[in-house]
Length: 191
Image (cartoon, rainbow, N blue to C red; front, top):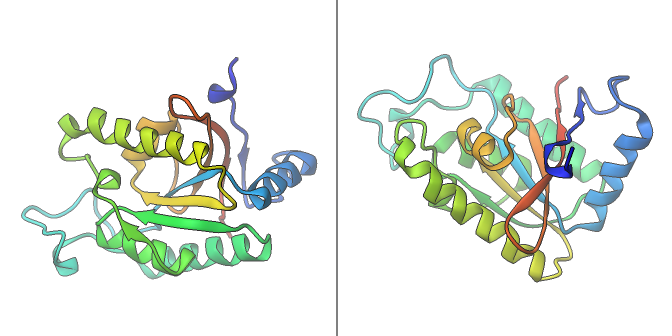
């Protein structure tokens, strides 16, 4: 099985689901930088997708983070800071739930429409995924000092990593410098 298909799901970071050596290894790799953190936005108010006629420029028309989602984003940011994981740059989908997740977890993030949800526009999947993979590969060539965080949606992460993630879960990707990325780990910050 190639590395891009191997993944260990670590529940609650440090639970007995995986050997602590594997967990320490991923934290060590993240501290060194050069990885890409794909994060799904935190939990939202009930619903599926966005209401009809939603607008990106009006958060009141979208499905937004719940209090639980805000707490999840705080846990992610606190844990990454406690583990001394350097974030060189953060990008976010322009959806309000992603922006808020990114702000809480990382402080600042730059909107990037390629991370926008294609849940209701599956014809955008191939182009958006190719753009994200191209940016990940380009990042590898810069010999980065930190990690890049990208806050996006479940459908986007599944297209990029072939992994299904829950709200506020992270897929850690290793840029391969050529053609995209390889999945390293899936991290869950559940309470």
